[in-house]
Amino acid sequence: MADTSTGSSASVVAARPELSIHDGIVTASSIQVAQFFGKRHDNVLRAIRALIRETAADDYRLNFEEVIVDFTNGKGGSQNGTAYRMTREGFMLLAMGFTGKEALRWKLAYIAAFNRMEAELQQPAQDPQRIQLAQRLATQAAAQVTQAVFDAVMSADNTDWRHARYLLNLGYDREGQPSVPHAQPIADDQMIVSFNALPDRIASGEVLSATDAQLATLATACTQRLTQRAQHREKQAAKPGLPAAQSAPSLQPGTLMMTFK
Image (cartoon, rainbow, N blue to C red; front, side):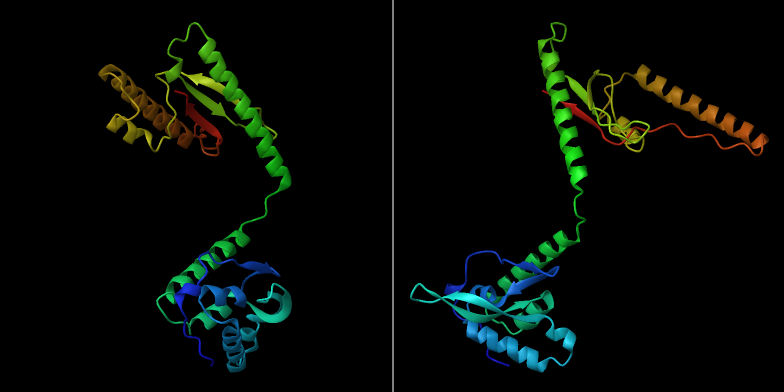
């Protein structure tokens, strides 16, 4: 195999690796690899060809594709030359022979670049209609927020508008179509929190500055509701064949709480 020891780090390009996609596969160019690792391109070509000869399996040889590219010569002109496009596996085979203090840094940089681009390829393509719908709803939501804040500031009754809170609802109708976003004010004693987080929020006092009487009322209401559910289950058990009671509806997805201060 040809000598692939790293040359002077002064020739290393101070930039991030640039990869390209060909036939749905992320590839690296032998030209840029040579620049980043501070090597002569002809030496990199010699190393790649040695790998191709030494690799018996055809599957591994497919990791290197010979291409014709334009090179800029020292006289300001250009000429045709040979280069290689390498897959991730091809690059790893080649880079295993690179040594030196800069080599590890550029190996890691290339691996990170491969990871980023391959992750982007795996993401599903965005539906144009979905993008258009999102833009339309975002515009409507922005208009609702603007109007809600304007009304709050201009209202003579609301003197503490800087601490007002608003609920922005991005719901759906019965046909599954998105409804027009709606912003409505939230009173100081109102809160939006999941059932799972509510006990911890109450215990820590993070969302409630309630009095003892208010906490006792809340506890009593919960106890009463549990008793009602237990009684209902007993009645259901006594009447076989009836469907179980449905749970209480939860907050629809797409509901946001915003505070304008």
